[in-house]
Length: 180
Image (cartoon, rainbow, N blue to C red; front, side):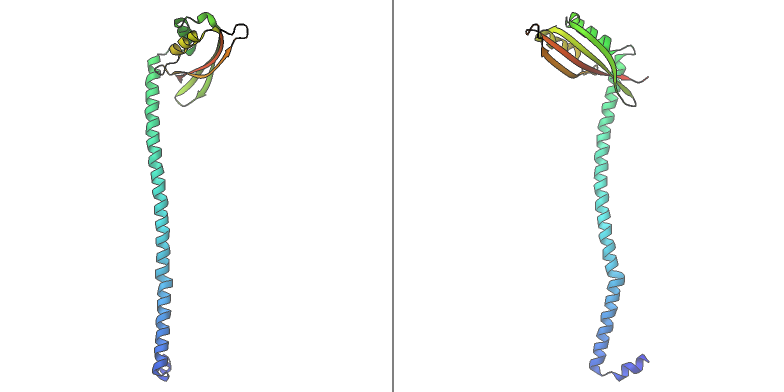
């Protein structure tokens, strides 16, 4: 049947049919093989790019985690040096005595701050009255200690209304304690 059809065509028609058949075959090959392959290649390139970005982010997070682990280890060493009997309250009383301001303490209230899996923040709210700038400076110098993990978290300084030469100071001081 195809042979009889082909034999009925003249040379020009045969070229036209052969050209159309080649065009259809090329279109099918493109549609079935080439275009899906190119689309898959684009998807693969996009997936590789996405995964590379994720890998960079994971590496950054890994580096940050290593830094945090090192900081945690340093904190653990510092806390271990405190000793089991360390309390922020007694530490501050000692430092107030050292700075000669123990008589200026109006009140000290201990409380608990934030807690992590390994540590607990210990807080002391403290008010000192009738302080000179030098006394305040001395107390802050003695009280804040990175080695002991003691830091001034908040400070409010006001001139006293009764005597403007003196200061009224409210402090929130924090330290880390190991969880028992």
